[in-house]
Image (cartoon, rainbow, N blue to C red):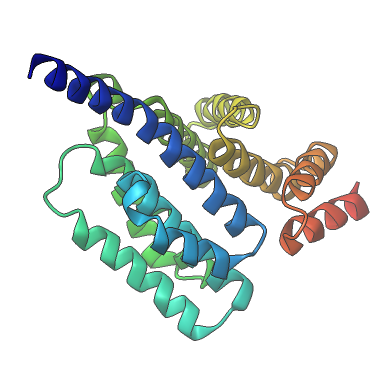
Length: 247
């Protein structure tokens, strides 16, 4: 009996050690499908492997997949589906522990992108305030977040800090310092070993360099790298060629 219990304990430790690695592999696989515009494959894998993917990343991937489907198709149905996914993720996580705050930060960031895309300035302003208040609530040093979640949190916080410093015209020197610090942090994440973090940071930084900072050569490098990583992504290819024409 002692021997049997020992084997069971050992097996449970092996399973716990293997699960995160298996989940990470599935997350990266779904993510690659999304960014190669293979949306059907991404949906199928998410559905079939739902129980094997970390719930946090399952929500993040669902949001990201529905967002890019709506962007590439520009269909009203896909736009409605994106909004329904955001609502579903929010409702499913109501009353959940502190970890949901990072999911909520990501969710609100996608909502902000959506409102800006359709030029809803008032809605975007309200979301900006909500994100700002949420960031004040989150103290990652007090929470038991894993390194993958922490990196995503810091990336989204840096992105918010950068764009927020562009909006407020007061305290220009302070805002300029905040932008420089945020840019440095985002650039650091482009070299991260986590595929999700490095891809998202590269995309956003490329857009910043191209559309705001007017550092087109840096933008070209980032978009070309993304095109190499995701050769079927037409947006990355278009951004790369647009950047070259402006350099």
